[in-house]
Image 1 (cartoon, rainbow, N blue to C red):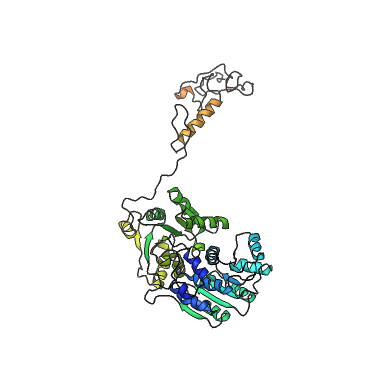
Image 2: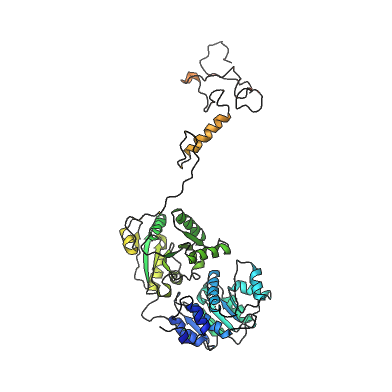
Length: 495
């Protein structure tokens, strides 16, 4: 293995990497760092999770020097907020032995803190296109001296429609600059972008010619599952032998939140990242996941590029992605840094056509996903799930009521609380000293029911001034009772 010191990296950066246990370089880093350090424009192409961030970050930090002047000298553009946070943390780690300051500029956060860091003289900016252009238009971000420019995950920029914004950003940076473009895939528009804004770039591709499109260290499992059984299947997969941190991708924000609620109820430590959450809540979820406080992260594709956690063992596609590129980026959250991983994909009956396209593009050789239920024996065998595993690791907490003397506690179905309310209601109506109050409508005696026992003269009742339930001191109004029965011709009706 080639070390970073062998590649000509400065000792203080090598020391910062070694303090994190990072000593040997990955193939993409071996190829790009020696070219990037002297200032060669580079197009770097490698699968996700193979170390592209250090591939462009080390040359950027080293070329700025140990004590750069205040003001933005380097700009790193990324497509998503989560990736901005991830790249910021990596670059900030590289500069821990230098005076260089790094700032993350992205939406969903207050402007004030980001503006203060820019005014304080931050030299490296990591940001998303929208917020970068916004601050530049307000003349709060000066890019006229940014001689180091990096586009990370350029293909995702294209997918999200950021190409016009990238062109605006390139108009604000110096014409003479060192430009690096990194991406997992290289579609035609990205190549055209590179030709327009780069100077004689060298295209470095760190792919094994024998490896194919997918990473060899990831096991891909595809099931045709019923929508009503998915949660149970996922809960059993999360109890597989050797499972570490796991990422579950859903198609919609509502499905993500519903699934995190369901898994939390089943006893799993689950967190969510989706567009309906505030940026602070998203960052808290990501931080708890990275720290190991939560071991299941449920996300929409907003997080597909921003999760750089080396110990993710399982990626589960709750719903199939729309295309093979999205599939690759989702699956790339596991099997990172040379480790192995498992990618499980559920295909609904109506999405079989999508799987056919992905299967053909990625050459999986699985045109027909196996029909699978939570009780299917092959599910346990494929994913090392212990026999007898059920989809719940703890029972859901029941609502407990405080039992009264001689009364059983609630059983969760609400019957005891209804009985208590009924008794209180009866007590409030004069139960006690004046005898039992009526709890049901009267049934006439001639219909087979006994006549009610009167507590006093007709017209007297619970408001006659003497009962415990009396409140206003006034007697109740005299009630006229109608009695139905056979009438004798000529006799007056019963009053």
